[in-house]
Length: 422
Image 1 (cartoon, rainbow, N blue to C red):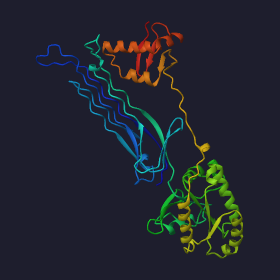
Image 2: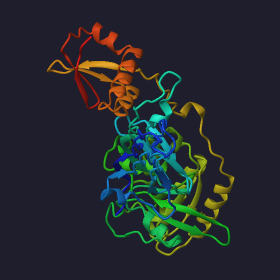
Image 3: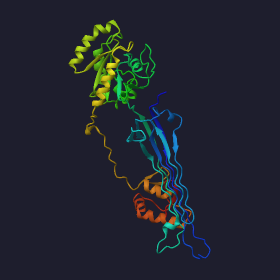
């Protein structure tokens, strides 16, 4: 089964908690704070694996969590780092934010790694809070929560050459002839429902990857049929083999088919319409094809296209097509105009913002303030005082007063709730 889309949840490990402790050694009557820091939580890392060619594994497992960092120890001992979680993906995987659709990574190189969720830092032990004024702090931080998010994975095949054309023009038969791929071949439309890859070997050091893209129809650029699902697999191809049924046995004119398919390619992605193309005039073993071929040849020459007469049934002409395709790949230069590139510019993140729930609770949001709250030990008096300092320094109290907060109103930050008292 070919799966080329997936939605998964990734959660990095939280940092380990810092230790609150004091030296208790013989002959050291006034041992100072000695609590160590917690270890960093594990990252969630996407890594490209050459042995994968679909996203089917994510159909059965959708949640991935890295290991939490170890807690700090006495004598300033650091907690152990959490182990990273590695997720294998096939080459050609695009990673997007689930909510916004913004592209986070485009993974194409074998062994390429991308940290999709970063582990939280370890909480600091009480030894880190010693000052000239405060010589014996009892406060220690909890570990920082790790990043967590839903992401979308989309696979775009990394084929050098793509076979395109209407259903039943013989693309699968050609692929099975020139490579070891064994796509399903039958005398009805849409036999191929998923893209199929094959490696074409032309001798030592001469090979390329050929993709059989399922048959396109009018309206494919708008998603008609399975248009979007298939068209995106052509985006990475460097060369297109446009297969035409010159026999016209399906009742269609091959020249009209040529224009309709190219229109769908250009409407989906303008660059696709400009990709180099070779016209593969198939089914030349049929009498009708021999009658039509000269007309098609004359027209395509005027269009500036190279034409090769072939028969997928007998294998005639296929070697010449593949040799020419390999030659054009050697000459290919990527044409990617700068104006086509999408640039995402991050807006400055607000330090915090306030909303109000139906029951009147004031809710303070903000990535940094939420992480700070998660790291504070509210069972410790010094921890509460530290929170109060942060509260005032960031101007949260002032902002709440502007929103009309009154004494006794409920306030919530992350999962910490309390009553407001000036």
